[in-house]
Image (cartoon, rainbow, N blue to C red):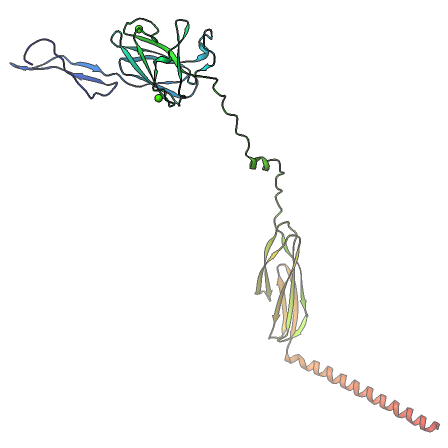
Length: 335
Ligand SMILES: [Ca+2]
Ligand SMILES: [Ca+2]
C-alpha cells in the first residue's frame, strides 16, 4: 500500500494459545519500523481435575479465552430444584469465557476423563436455579468429548447479558442413578475351592540310610563269589534316592543309585570275586565288615583234613570187620 492510515492483514495457520509479535515496516523515502505489537491466539486447552476424582477434563473454546476454570462438587450446590435422577459423573465446572465480541456464539469443547453415555444432559446452576441446558450440547455420541454452544446473553450465559462475557457454571449429567462401583470381584470358583481345603502339610523329606550290611560267606576261596547285602531303609515321608558305594579295602569297587519308597527297606546286593587270597575289609557308608579268601596254598591243610578223614574211615571199617569176624567165630563155636 502507498497511503497512510490503518491497514489490515489476514493471517492464517497460527497455533492456538500462542503470542505472536509483529512490527509494521514502512518503505519509502528510507525505511522505518512501527512499534512492536503482539497478538495471542485463543483455542488453547485448559485442564482441570474433576470434582468427582474421575480424572482431568480439558476445556477449549473456539473464541475468546476460558478463564477461572474450576471444578465444582455437586454437593456444594443446593439440592432444591435439582432434577430427580440426574447425576454428574464428573461433577460440575465453572468457567468464564472472555475476550469475545458482544453477543458472540462460542463453542466450548469439553474432553472428559472418560466417556459419558449418549443422551447426556447438561445442567447449570445459575442464579439460584437449576437450568436444563441440554439443548446446548453437541457431539453427544457416547464418547468423552462433548461440545457446548453458548451465546453471550443467551441460554447458558449466567449473567444473562450480552456483554462479551459468558459465565458458565454447570456440568454434563446422565439421567438415572449412576451404578455404584462394582463390588470386589468374587473369588473365582477355583479359588473358592482351594481356600477351604486345609493347607497341604509339608512332607518330611526322604531320609534314606544304611541300616546294616551282611557278607556271605565270610570265608571263601579265590574265584568264588562273595555276596554283600546292604540293607537300606527310608524313614522319611518322601521317596528318596541314595548312592550306595561298596568299598573293598578302602577302594570303591561298585556303586549303585537306588530309589527307596517312604517307609520301605531296600536290599542292595553286590557280588565280588577275588582272585588273590587275603582278608578283605568291606565298607558301605559307616558300616564295616570283612571276608577272607583262601587260595591254593591253603589247600594243603584241607588235603590233610581229607587224609585224616580217610584214615578214620579205614580204621572204622577195620574195626567193623574185626567185630564181624569175632561174631562169626562165636556163632560157629556155638553150633
Ligand atoms: Ca462426542
Ligand atoms: Ca454475558
